[in-house]
Each structure stands twice: as structure tokens, then as C-alpha cells.
Length: 266
Image: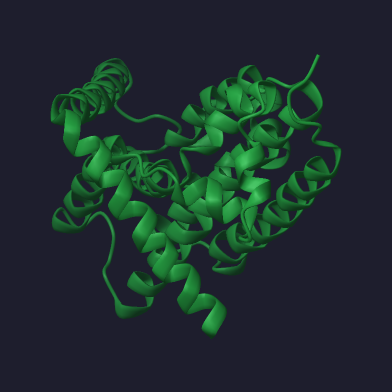
């Protein structure tokens, strides 16, 4: 318990210091938040445009699709909010040697990376996600029970772990490739497919979303539990299993990468 309380206290200190730095330029925060809100509105406009032409897509209604879209943004927003600094590992920390500072401190290295930055731009994703999940509740698209609220929370956490695991895995590739940002960018572009039901995609894309990069387990698969009462073990249970397994793989690769890290040099 002492170790946990120590890390909680350290995290609070790191976050407070980071907030002080961003308060020096408030405009950057509002510009970033506005940019994410605009990108979300663009995605929703695209969804409405599709449904104007196809009122029912693979038997999914617009209201159900909006729930899946909103649901997908919440775990993604949590990951974006808390672990965005992993991008810097893949992009420049390894190749420039600035990763050295984490090795010199007597703390868990992954903890140091994620607590160094809190990306408040992610509030745009969380806001949109919350609005459309709440809309689905108001319109009766999903039935609200204590059990479903509990499983919703579990699913959101598991989904965020999947996003973080994928990001950590490709960020760790920088220990070998020096710059893994193209791999990270490509994986996150694929994550955009998670906003919609996988049935609308071709088989190769479905295979990728359910195996190699399991973003289908972030929103679509667990959403079937809330929308059509699909089997709990094949939805939330499978999501948790994928999240746990992928995290073990990603963190193992990250630790192996630490052993081959050589800092900057000639």
C-alpha cells in the first residue's frame, strides 16, 4: 500500500506541475480542444451523410450507430488524456536520447512517461462520447440497469487499456527502429474503424480489427451487449481478456526494449 500511495502522490505532483505549464499559454489549450471538437463534428457529419443514403446499414439504425460512435470515444478519450506522452517516445525521445532521464530516476519508467503529460485536448472526445451515450439512454436505445452501468464502466476501462497497449507496443518499437511514429500513426488511423460496426467492412479489415489490432473490442463488440443483449462472455468478457492479454504483450515488449536502449550517440 505504501508503494501505491507514493505513486498516487507523485502522479498528483507531476500533473499539478504540468497544469502550471499549460496555464502559461491558455490559448493553446482552447485551440487544441476546438480542433478535436471540430474533428468529432466532421466524423458525425459523415455518419449522417451515409444514413441519408442508406437509412439502415447492415440492420443497424442511426441511433444505434450513434451509440457505438459515442461509446468508442470514451475509452479513446481516456487513453488520449492519460497516456498521450507515449507518442513522444516513438517520435523523438529514443532517437534524441532524451529518454535517458527516465532511466536515471528511481521510479517505474512507464509511470514516469504517462504522468509527465496530461492531454486535455481529449476532453473533446470525452464530451462527444458522453453526449451520445447519454442521448442513447434518453431515447431508450439502451436499457439502463445497475448491472449494465457496472459493465459499462468495466468495458470503458478495458477499452482504454486496449488503446494504451497498442500505443505502447508501437512506441516500444522505437528502441529498435529509433523512430516508430509512422507505425503509431498507422495503427491509430485504423482505430477510426472502431467507430462503426465491423460487419460493414470487408473480411480482411474485420480480421485486422479483431486480431492484429483488436479495436473492434473497444466499442463495437461490447456495445452489442448493451444494444441487443449479446452474451456477456462473448462481449465484455472477451474485451477484458483481450485487454489483459494485449497489455501483457505490449509491456513485455516495452521492457525488452529498455534492455536494448543505447541512448544517443554517433
